[in-house]
Amino acid sequence: MAQDLYETLGVSRDADSDAIKKAYRRMARKYHPDVNPDPEAKEKFGEVSRAYEVLSDPDKRAHYDRGGDPFSSGGGFGGAGAQGFSFTDIMDAFFGGAGQAQGRGPRPRMRRGQDALIRLEASLAEAAFGTRREITVDTAVLCGTCSGEGAAPGTHPVPCETCRGAGEVAHVQRSFLGEVRTLRPCAACRGFGTIIADPCRECAGDGRVRSRRTLTIKIPAGVDTGTRVQLSEQGEVGPGGGPAGDLYVEIHVAAHPTFTREGTDLHCTVSLPMTAAALGTAITLPTLEADVVPDDREPVTDLETEVEIDVRPGTQSGTQQVLRGRGVPGLRGGRGDLVVTIAVDTPTKLDARQEELLRELAALRGEEAPSGTVKPGAKGSVFGRLRDAFNSH
Image (cartoon, rainbow, N blue to C red; front, side, top):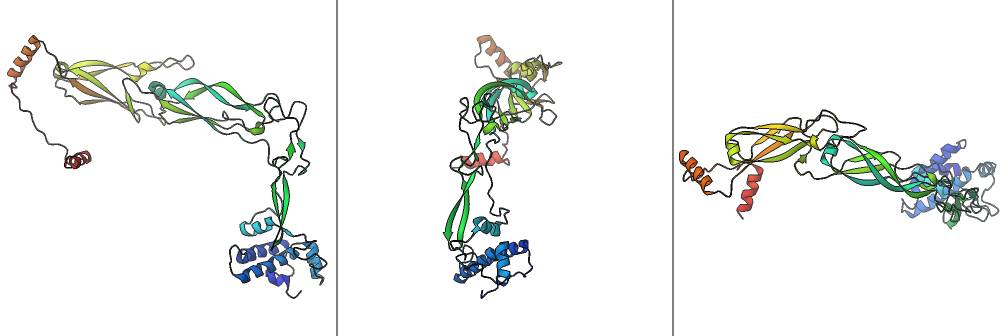
């Protein structure tokens, strides 16, 4: 040949197969028409490909080293007798794959199942202190008739005659590069390499069936709306009897008639008559523990179901009392507070005697005709500035 193939690839005559392959990768990345639009690059890439076809084949390389023409007698590049090179070699040149004209093989029938998600409503006390709940789930489970194999009892999948169990078939196309071989999943067996001639009648060959079952879930203390509890391998069983995915239970905390939750803190409002706020009093407030339902499996003892709050004389509406450690336990330990807001109720209906007494009190306090006291607002606060901005328009 007019041109030395070793020189074309830039390797020495004693280069091993790895060195030849690396040289081809380097040259292919440089001259492939998809990355180099120069017309001369296309011609150079053809030369590089022909050199690689010869030097990567031990028989053709030996024939070439002896002075013979490896492309003669119809055996030239892309000729009727050409062995060609796999499309995998070109992809290997760009991505460094280890395909070496080998396919991926049959894909397994047994695959991992999908994860499943269900939503569970819990009371505020259940979310705060934790509990156990029984839940019903409808998921795919292992077929008991075929044990996940998919074939009818007494039968088994047989090798595919089309692909001979490989799961893929070769398709050859001609191009300026020569014969480009690609591997595609076998249409007869859908890439599995085996065919189920007599599918299981219970699962129709899938290896799994749908079933409703009951599980016991432990809700940890401190969860909130949106918290997900993971149950490993309790989700969907995979095709072919593959391992099950995970089951996620998403908690939704129901509204409470007394308490509202902000993080780990609880808030509630206590309404007091005007006289009680003025004179002071003591009130008994039920705690969240009062909602705990005893569980025979894990009984909760020493629950303080109520707490006493001391309302000082002269307490104003909006006054807050913070009860430390009376809130919601945290997932990582600790416990929030219970914030109690006092709301003073002003009577709206007075009988004659009540009105007389209030007027006497007002006279004693010199409040027969009060004009009110104007106090400065929080002009410097963010909300104050926003309010003023809206009021100015």
